[in-house]
Structures are given as C-alpha cells and as structure tokens.
Length: 310
Ligand SMILES: [Zn+2]
Image (cartoon, rainbow, N blue to C red; front, side, top):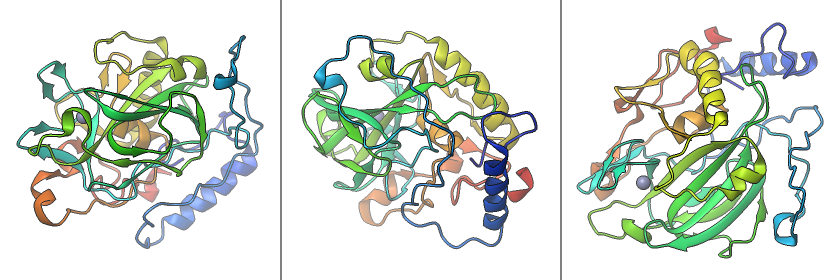
C-alpha cells in the first residue's frame, strides 16, 4: 500500500478504496505512535478474489479448504521482532553474501531461538527437513496487484533452520497472514556455535500458485522465470526508484530469486522497528542502513516513506 500509491488510470484499486487508502495514509502521516509488534491485517479490498489455481488434476493433498477467499492483501512481516541481519564470525547474512557453495540465496534475519515465525500471507504451505536447511517451511503467496504489475504473480517464501514447525509433513496446509507457522532455530547447517540464531528467508517468483507450491528452493537450481523479470521491472518503477530504495553496492536479484526484504517491503509488510538485541546477539546484529539505502523513509526505524510521497 505505502510504496504503491494509486495513480490516475489505475484499475487495481477502485476509486472508493483509493479514497479510503488516501485517508488512511494521511491519517498515518501525523506523528506516529510506535508500531505494534505485529500489526493487524489491513483493510481488505472489495474486489472479488481471482481464481488463480488452474491445477487441472488436483489431488486431495493439493486442495485443502481455504480459510477464506484469497484477496491478496499486503504481505505481512515474518517475525514479531526485528534485530536486523545476522553478521557473525561464521559469515554475513545478507542476500548474495559469499558462501562456500557460491552465493547466499536469502537473507538471515537475526532472532533469538524460539521466536515465532509468521506467515506473510493467507496461502498454502508445506514443511520438510534436510541436512542443509534443517527444518524448513515454504509458503506460496499471491502478490498484491499494484501499479506496474500487469498480472497476478506469486512468491514462494522459504524459511529454514527452524526449531519447530506448525506441521511436519509435506502435505499442503492452509495458513493465515500473521499465523505462527514455526519458530526460529539452529537446525541444519546453522547448528555450529559460531552461527548466531537466525531465520533464513528466501523468496522465489513464479507465475502461478501451482509452480510456487512446487518450488523446492534447491540452491543448485538457479534457473530464471519470466515472472521474475516482470516483477523486477514493476518493483523498480513503482517502489525502488520513487523511494530511493536500493542495496549498497549489490544486486537485488539472483535469477528467479529476489531479495526477500525488498519484496516484503515493496508489497506492504509492516516491519517492526529495528532494535539492537541484548547480550551476545548484539555483536551479530547488522542494521538495515548498513546494507540498504532509502531517501523517503528511515530504513532502520520504520520502513515507511514520508507523507510527501503520497
Ligand atoms: Zn541463510
């Protein structure tokens, strides 16, 4: 919502909704109270849900009942706290940081063991376990339609090194935006004492829900998608450039993978304010402003562009 103001000629937001959003943005431009640890879901669009699951031969496991029609509301942040990006003796947690296998495929969000992991959308999820990612989950999210995006696209969000999962089998499960789907841990190759506890978060862009749900997040697969190209252009023109939002000296993309922090912010996540953790974790905490720049908002404290942008 915040990065994608409605424009004349836009068909993605009906006029009454635009007025309401404008009112809300104006209201929010007054001196702000600190953001709650996790904001409630915002107002839903009155538009009918689009039927986007074309799977012609659904199996029982592929079609759990939805909690409600999908409305592609703004994405939610994935943790109730924000301690920035992991940076410890074992390595840097930023997107595309050097790794023994080449390049980091996600962002490592520093967080204490046991911190709840929250679903960024109403969607469907599956869980699993392997030696490198440990206990993992992925959630397929319909990306909200915004200016610059010509059609509905999907993102598969991947969460690794969890200590627990809301479900442990690989069947598909319906999840709600903000629902606790797991907890931060040190499973898989994050188990060493030198690695600070964190959530490995990864996002891959797809054209359909079926392909997003089929995504395996294998680091060996660095193929590209048309959806990623389309999203790249939409984010650039409608979110990054208007807000002076960028990485310091690094890319936001790796083939079909996008920097998940940028994806969440550009699609409306209400990130909690950054706080430096207490104790030993303080050493491993890297602020957002060390990695990203933004001219229209304070990336460390609020991730909210100034009212002038509206
Ligand atoms: Zn990682």
